[in-house]
Length: 296
Image (cartoon, rainbow, N blue to C red):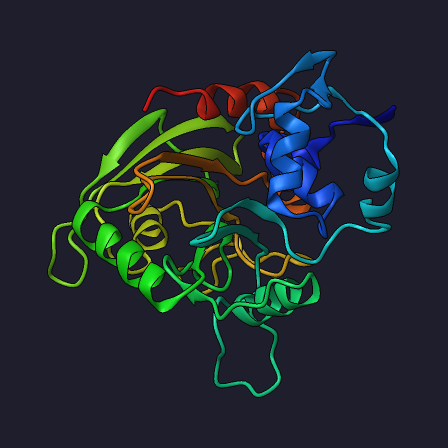
């Protein structure tokens, strides 16, 4: 039996994503077979593919020759949160652009993901569906074909994505509120709820109701609480962190092909957690469990 303790790196990660990171070369069918057969257990109990893991859980996997052969010696470069034949949802690191930029030779998420998939024998040309800013981390949807990109793009344009972000901001935010400052001459609305704070910083759940460019960053700056590390919108500068402290934690949509409701969570980067306000690291596990289990 293979045994693992769930840490901050995998807190709020799905059981399926956990296995994908352990066995990055394994076919999707094999990953799902391990789960459906009950070979992955959390705290001794069987789980579903979308069961969310929590820091402190114990994961056990039935050991076999094939599982041992597929175990990765190191954490894979690409953090896959969910995947099927039509798209892959990955946890983008802060500081990494989604697509090619003007700077020659600079790494980007699309090329990194394409290289990873080619290396495991499933080469595809990927197309971004939602594009996070370079400094923002979290759930990013990449379509596996032009037809998938068209279907997903139409869905996003017509229905929108259910998005939930986590942010560390300057100053002490109010308990909750709605920011409705127009952006670029258009209506824009952002809801927020403060999860923890001290005199210098706040940790907040943020929901963009509309979808304007840089909406969360602009709105938080407009009320005097910019995202930490956000140079463009006057956030306090950070040393040692490659982006700003805004994370796309949850994305939900109806799959335009299968009709399945997808709800995907992206664990916080470990370096992000270090910047939470005083006391928050002691309670953030419970806070994120509450967020992750909120009704749809």
